[in-house]
Image 1: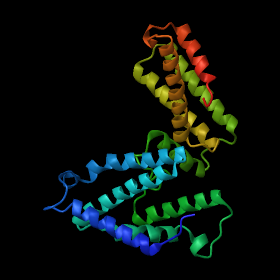
Image 2: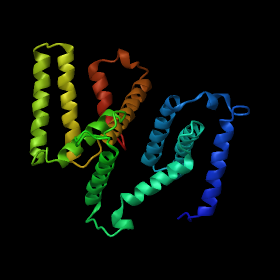
Image 3: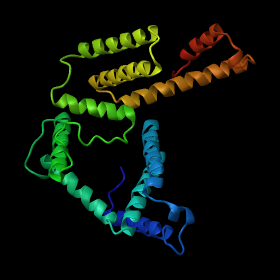
Image 4: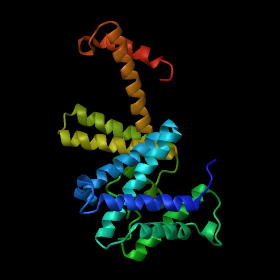
Length: 272
């Protein structure tokens, strides 16, 4: 296990902050870095976060270390731009998260107790709600504070969890599955009736939302489930392409039966 070395960490972080300051130096900095603002950097911040997630999925320690560094650089980049506007600096960011972690863990840094991880999650959300209320950043809804910028699946699941904490939920998973069946039937009916595309899409959206709710009931992360399913499809499709190539065929020229045969072979491929 890597050893804690606060003195070394402090020096390394100081060096990173100095590098960032140099990159943004108006006279001697990097032209690209100088052109950036908060909005233009956001896509890179999101990309780096997803690359961290990919490194975790691959269980690649070296890649994870590298990607965490890239993500840290994004935090430093935003903090530097804020410093240039006299808003706050990196030390303020660190101080804020230090204070928040202590405040939201009274069972660790105070006298409170929690029974398990689920209880801590509920307590965490209660602390967040209290902080939003203290800031006046709430309209009194349990759904206040759910970011619009979250990926759609993640946001849907977070909304569902928030609603469920108020008691707005099914009594058992059978109700969730019945709702899923109901939404599928409504989609089929809309298609059969040749309703307007907007109406069909609305029904499809309802079906997707219900599917996410089933994932929540199964204590599964909808984003991860779909990412894994996409990965499985990708692996099998690549195998289909390889099988067609072996027979010197183009997929577009294959019959549906030929494609189905390839697909069934791909499904039997080890690891798929």
